[in-house]
Length: 353
Image (cartoon, rainbow, N blue to C red; front, side, top):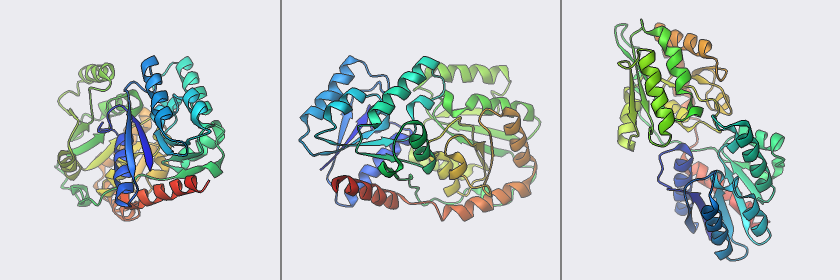
């Protein structure tokens, strides 16, 4: 029996929750008995009631149970982890360190880093989604590499986007960004980088929730008005699977200016559709997007991002070169069955002690 502990609604449309859902489904397909246990919303800043709920959940589990805890919650539960580590096999699933979320105050970042460092010390195993994050946990959080398993997210087989063909010079290029409207995803940098390129023929569609961080969404709408980009940029909100697939199919270039990614599932999805990529190389992005498929600049380098965007907007041959690189790489992306099998092997190592 495996308990998979997730804070909030497991159906939430973010990369981390999608990873959790697909891994759980894959483990079940492999014959593993998995129970999804829900914690209250509000992590990584749980209130007293959420902390009591987490402690009650762990207390109710029998000794020796393997318990996978999503990192959004695990890093905020150092005291509960300390109390239950001796009798439960606690496995931390770290998508990315909590303290690296953009928009935190210095004191908040220190608090999250300290809590996650203490919590991880009580995990018998740590699973993370990229080698880059594994190295970061070893260097900054004191987690020995021998205790870490890297299980990259999978991707589904996908039809090629229209970027797989050379486009006529008079086409309006469709740029696609897939990310929740939060500070870390860097929409503000992307809009600023596009502002000097008004003379080019482009349209940007941003797919992602505007509800999870209403203040950021409002600030981005105000920025678009100030930059006079309101008619060029569509904030499309969340999309279902079929609608999202259609957005990828129609796109010519994938763009995402994240400050940091623990892996970058949207980048991998773009590559699976054969899309050229423009973005920032924070965290694991440079390992997710090969140089032959994308133009990546340093996080926060708006001028560099603008130059990269101009390059793909102005040069059809460059777009085709990057699309060819994406099409070549997509065959090397792991599928979800492969990811679930790797996750199962990591849990087998837990069971073996």
